[in-house]
Length: 197
Ligand SMILES: C[S@@+](CC[C@H](N)C(=O)[O-])C[C@H]1O[C@@H](n2cnc3c(N)ncnc32)[C@H](O)[C@@H]1O
Image: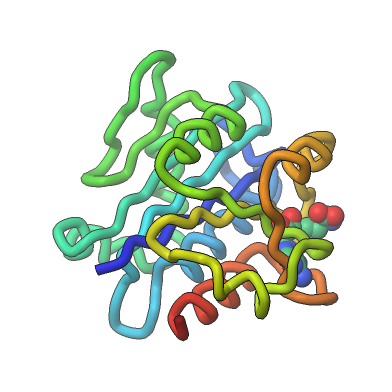
């Protein structure tokens, strides 16, 4: 069974668990929509790894990882509503300790790690692709992509800020066309292309 891998980056998502309003917490609501649209399909979950990098105050960066596989699916199925997912994310943020990878729930990990460090780690085994409107059209790029060896990186509404220039030099870019999509829509479109490979 193939294992998809996405990285979602948020410049402003809050990095502590004391969150009352998701929209005022650096738009963690966008991370939750992305979680739902990356992982869930009707009556099932995808086998995949989803990384969320939160770079907002008060203690950036935070790296949250969700590994969905045949074993973890049964337990993770309970996180289907936005409320459940936000509860899980808050719990993970509360439990994060410097220098440790903490498993807050089976196959849900949190640690202090930056986007660049994560890219370096995953690049040792896989190719990271940057989702960028000015990249190579997906229609062209998809033919050369091995879905088991590809990791797709995209951001929330704030984009990558000053990091974009470096990321563009560092990684091959893929475009989904002229329209600027929400991060959660990027997840849906990517999943659709990969489903049809
Ligand atoms: C809402 S967009 C970000 C818009 C932000 N103002 C910017 O300039 O980066 C969220 C992310 O989705 C991805 N994205 C959106 N539309 C895309 C497209 N047509 N092709 C490739 N990636 C896209 C990019 O990674 C972008 O960072």
